[in-house]
Image (cartoon, rainbow, N blue to C red; front, top):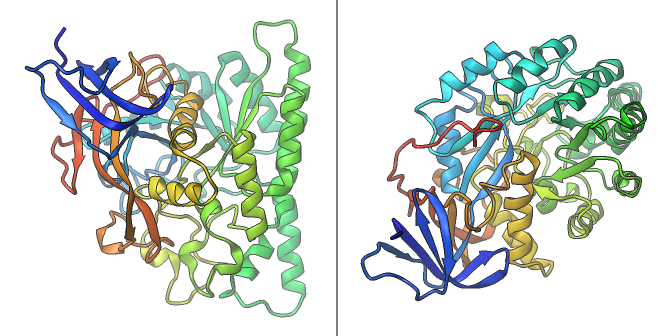
Length: 464
């Protein structure tokens, strides 16, 4: 069969390494990977030259707040930013939209809002909140890729956090379904205690980042991971001898290096728990955040320089398996920049468009290369949502989702060129410029243009 298009280059990142190759695409799928010059004369060819051809990024941690809070982030704005950043697969978080994605009906409302407005493929997480255990199977059958819960207030009242008893009940149901549960792993006790100490002590300046950092101590994450381990151990005993080995739990946006020994022990004990971190935890350090710069606020917080390097070591070890954005923009007024009040500002960082250059810049400094980058940003996130047979890899049978980018080119982040203007990366110098993004063999981003329009698909479990 003659390919519809061949995409070739001198630096193609495949499972075999980085090498010259031509990628033969038929009907949107990679049909073959051949020598760079093995190209039929009658076939359309895109020649990347010395630019890198890599699997496009998969981002499993994105807050698209439509319907209900579309002015924070909608499907059109999010997916265009994704395409410009070399991302063609997003998985939308179940909160910040109204209604939250905690029932089948709310999922259907999400899908209806998304159809015809997505430049990239979009899947969905379902939400676990107190009392919605009967909804979990309905959401699963409707195609969610997994489930999300909070162990602490989520920041919005319509998505309540779960207590231990709620979590245990939900995990039993998710075990029966074979679903993954991703968890915002902070518990309230240490945070409440830190806030009490701040209130009882000398007045703290809310403009200082150190004030906010003290209010979100590492113990909140450490105790949350310990709680998850206890529940997994308990559930593993109850399901022993059944077809299920227990639920799979994934810790999102992990920032506390103190909890890494717990994760290491969980892995040694065979507990099904994995973890991710985010570019801002690997780029920034608490000591460097200016007073009043509330665009840096997120929860869990960006921690100290030493903590950052321990996260890098955990990523290298494979203890932390992936890096996703936790893209959570909001209207600029919610960041309270005019007051610089870290304690009252909305917590969330806009970075969907910048994950590739941020990670490449920092990875290079520490001696990592393109293969590690593709694992952390592409194949590992695809595996989390069981899309690895279709996404995150340049392999025959996978979708022809490819990003062409120049790793040698540097640029200074200009907010005017971003789809989301308020970001802590403004003014930062980064390496790696996205040139062209392909979705199923079609250009969806090319040198600042979006030639294909909104051709993104809705990704549902069992029907990618």
